Every structure is written in structure tokens, then in C-alpha cells.
Image (cartoon, rainbow, N blue to C red; front, side):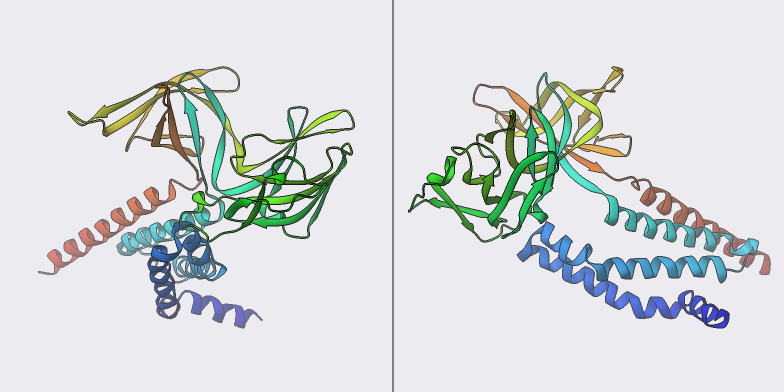
Length: 358
């Protein structure tokens, strides 16, 4: 058994692993890049770069570099530059795996003078059950499937999923039944073709609800950006059912003090824009920060970028900040610096050695 393990480690640390794996790795990267034109960025990421095949290849390369670095390196002073470069490659691969597995993206829209704590996910949707103003339960869209029955501990609400769609087409309801409630009396949801940009898809579902009064129980439709939530009285509690983008709380709050834009002279087109915000900690401590194009805020593992802005007809402005949560964001910087130092170090040692031999 020890001999077999040793042979495996020797093979993983050999150049043969790279020669076998790299062509497949590059083929997946090329296919995923080309597919973005037809499938869009999000679907290409899910199908190729977040696929088990791609992640397995990345993990195999990472483990191979680790074995090479740890078990096959010649620990001599003249090889220090090469070892440092290999360490940089290893950190880059580990950082890439961390980003693929744990990084999350979203956005936050803040009108001037308001404070926001929650980030909306670009891609993930969820069904929220709110009781008396507090979130009681969250149901991810992946669990909202046709024929699925949902129940909740501590709340006699039952939800039967009659239909669900990733990009709903809304049509006029032709036949109205007695058990149809709310907007389901006027509209029906059907499957439409998926958009290339995932955030432009309109998620929704047709639900059969029970647990409220006789007048409230029945069939409802829910979809993103629906003007009003479904409201029911259940056991003396006000229960609201809301469908939309998944939200998660930041460990700090963001207040927009001022939004400003620079226009091209003689036009109404923005040349650049920035947001003057205040970072507000839970204990009340706050400090000002300016977020501008190519000038993000990095704090507590989050990076906030200036993405866009919204101007209402009444002139009120709101900033839109892209939010990326990536605990491994330093890995590319550290890995690249180590690789550069290692290669430079090795080049200097080689030139010194050649100079001595002349």
C-alpha cells in the first residue's frame, strides 16, 4: 500500500500530469469562452467554469503542483527562485478554487440619504415567508419545483407548486376558476426562452396556498418585481409571501450621502461618476469613503464597485454598487508577486553563475 501511494505521489508530481491534463483544461476554457456568445455569461460559467469537470481538473492541477513543490523540489539555495515561483503558482490555483467555490456576487441600490444593509444576488432567487414583518422562512428557487409541496414548522401554511418558470411569459387568463385569488384571476405564467443575461430572466411560479381563511386559500401567481406581496391571516399572524432575488446581510451598513457625475461637455452623457458613502458599523461607528470607477471599497472580505446609477423622473438619484464577497481576493496578488520575485531571483542567480564561469 505504501509503495502504491508513493507511486501515485510521484506521478502527481511529475510533468506528465500537466501534459495530460492541460489540453483538456484549455479545451474547457476555450469552449466556455466561445459559448458566452450564445449562452450568456452566467449560463456559460455554470456549464463550464463551475462544472464538476473544470473544478476537478483545477483541483488535480493544484494537488499536482503541491506534490511537485513538496516532494520533488531540490532544496538548494540556487533553486530558491524556482521554488518561490512554484509557490506563487500554487497560491494562484488555491485562490482560483476558493473563488469558484465560495465567492458570491450581488448588488445594492441606495437612494441618496438612505442606508442599506442587504445585498441582492444577481442570479439566485428565493420565496420569502414573512410573518408579522420578520422573515420566517426562505425557500431557494431550486426547491420550488412543479409538484413540490412545502410546509413549515410553527406555521400551518402549505404551499403546493403548480408551475414554475425561470423566465416567465405573462399572458391574459382565459378561464377563471372560483379558487383563483389575486393576480391569478387576470394572468397566467408560462415558460419563455431564457435570456443570455441571467439577471434579465423573470422568475416566477403558480402556487396553491392553504392554511388561511376560506376566502384567502386558493391559487396565486408570484413573480419577481410583483407590485404587492401575497397577504394572508394565519393563526392571528399577518403572513406575506414574496418572490424575488435572494438577499443576504452585510456585516456593516452603507449610507449614501451624495452621488455625483461628470458629464461630457455639452452632453447629458456621463463621463464618470462616484458615490460618497458612509460605512456604518453595528456599534454605531462610521466613516466616509468615496467609491468611484476603478476605485472600489475593500472591507471585511467584501469589494464594492461603482456599477451604475438610477435617476428618477423627479430628479432623485440612487447609486448601484456591485458587491463581491471573496475571502480569497488577495491570492492572485500574492501569487503573482511571488512568481515575479521568484523568476527575477532565479534570473539574477543564473546571470551571476554565468558571469563567474566566464
